[in-house]
Length: 328
Image (cartoon, rainbow, N blue to C red; front, side, top):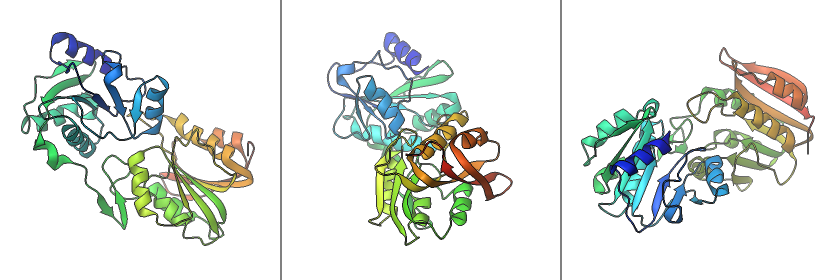
C-alpha cells in the first residue's frame, strides 16, 4: 500500500527527491516496499526490532535512531497522534531546511486528522489518495519543534510517546505484579518488558539475582534504563520471540502483546509462550497475564506440564505455568 503511493507520487511529480544526500525513512513496517527509492542513499530508522531486522536482512542500512543531516525524510505515520507529532518533529529536525518531508499513512491511522493539523503549520502539498491511505509533502523547517517528543512522569516512571501504555501501567500488568510470589529468586526474565513496570516489582524481591528486560521497542527500553536503577537488571533490545537468554531462567514474567498492527494477532502471544518455555530451566515457572478472549490454552498445554489459573478479573486471566516441556 505504501509503495503504491510512493510510486505514484514520484511518477506524478508530487514528490521530487533531491539527487544527492541521504534520505531517511522513519519507522516503515515489515512488508513495506521501498524499491522506488535510491537504496544507496537510504537509511531505515526504526526502534522496533522486528521491523529493523526485516529491513537489515534485505540489505538496507538500518539504525534504531537517526542522527545527522539528511536531504529528505519519509515519515511512515503511526496510529497514536502524539507519536505521529513526535516523528514529524524529528523529521523536520533531521532534514536540511527546505528539504522535502513526506508523510504517508493509512486512513485508519488518522492520516486525515494529522494532515489537517499540518496545514495550519507548514506549506503542505496537495495530498495523494490511494490504497486506503494518503501521502503529502512539506518543506523542513522549525515550525514543528513544539511537537518534539517529551518525557512523561507517570507514577514515578518515565515514559515517551509511542511506547505501550505511555500514560501508566495497564490493568493486566498491575494484576500480574500483585500476584507475583514473595519467594521469587534466581534468574528472572521479563519478556516484553516495556518501560519497566513489572521489572521493578521483580527486583523488589531480594533473592532475585538477575532480571533480564527483553523489549523490542528501543524507546521503551531507554525509558526502562531510567526507571530501573539496579545493577541486577540487564537490558536487551530484542524480539522476545527469538531472544535466547545467556542462562536458563528460573522465572519468566510477561504480559505479551497480541497485535503489532491494528488487527489482533493471537499467534504473537503464542510465540511468547514458546519463547518462555525455551528459556526456562527444567523446573522453571512462567507467570502470564492474558486477555480472557485470547486462545492461548493450547499453546500453554503444548509447552508446560503444570498449569494453573491463579487469579484475574472479568477481562484478564493470571496463569502460572511450571515445568516447561521444551526447557533449556
